[in-house]
Length: 258
Length: 248
Ligand SMILES: Nc1ncnc2c1ncn2[C@@H]1O[C@H](COP(=O)(O)OP(=O)(O)OP(=O)(O)O)[C@@H](O)[C@H]1O
Ligand SMILES: [Mg+2]
Image 1 (cartoon, rainbow over the protein chains, first blue to last red):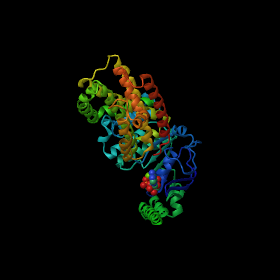
Image 2: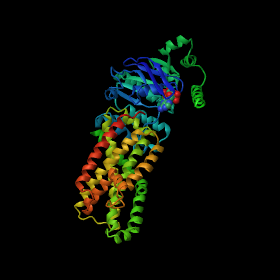
Image 3: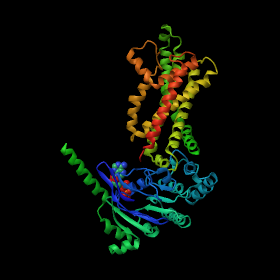
Image 4: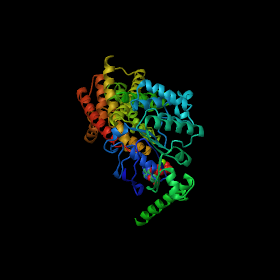
């Protein structure tokens, strides 16, 4: 992607972002809250149009060739996207149909995944009766049902217990190794990023502040852990508040001008 | 095709699982049927128009179909709010198929709900001219359902918030129902009202159902069906277009 920009009214969520992800690599996109990670993922996955700039995914443009791009995608969104009025199995099955997964594969792979994430016994229960972590597990299991070319995982391990997190990264790394799936992930757990990512980009206030392998980032900043490097790159203040404070001032200024 | 089917099935499953909602949404039409049907009956008869129950039963069926179909627009806003919409929007299927599946699902639910009310009108004493009239009338009812489910999709795709839909229900759907001639005959209306009733697609729907079930209609069943098909095509196109523009 090049010079990618997306604004929401007066807020510029993604500001002139340029980077590329290599085929088959596991790429971690890190940044403080509100940095613009989810917005970037939404644009790459065709559900949001960029304000300006160009995107390319497997040689295709998500804006003009959205259906072709979607054929190559698997996405686990940061916020829930399950149908809570359907059962766990119905959610998985519906996903399989949407992604043209043959019925037999749907059944076998769906069962294997639900078993792995320990949801098989609850497969016929409505999702609205699930705990937060169970929903998250189901969401991930569903996202892994088909084999995409590029898998987007937006904070997939949010709210998951250590067992499920391990389980998930093992499966994802496995998909990456055996099927060559490119993985694009975000997380706030630096140890995860350190462990699974081949390369990392750090975004702050909608701008890329660093890219490279975990070792390179540590070296650049002279830090001894990825977490320390991250804090050096992005500072130690809490971003959401800083962001909303400037927003408020802008709004206040507009109000006064009126 | 599998995609259209599975999304259609989803709407149907959700409908069948929400028994409380089914009963609750029959409340208003049953009240109209009971209170107006029997309350205005004597006046209507004295005015030489025959049985009011016979006259208004198709109108109440039309009302049920209109409201249920429009509610599928609210379901869309729910799906947006609770995230399921995203799941369908990133899937590698043309949005048109998703939109068609959803809309047909909403329309099917509306027809089922219409069938329940039809059964209630039979209990209340409504009698169609012949048994054969019933399936034919349901074809017209299905058309009404598609027209308004498509409209609901178009509106649901254009709104971001639930409150917006509340406005649509109050300022748009209620007038559609009151202007449709569901409750009063279309002959001899004041000119302004006559014009308004003629731009309301539900007018033709109710008139068509009346034409088939009672054998008397104002515009003629052929014109009614023609208008419904044309408006339906327009609304499906509008719904597909709005749906293709959704961002989440
Ligand atoms: N639909 C929207 N309307 C208005 N502003 C938005 C919208 N979506 C995102 N933003 C703003 O864009 C900025 C970036 O948000 P984004 O969700 O991309 O952050 P993020 O990096 O994913 O953060 P987090 O780690 O908290 O998930 C934030 O300031 C946010 O308030
Ligand atoms: Mg995010």
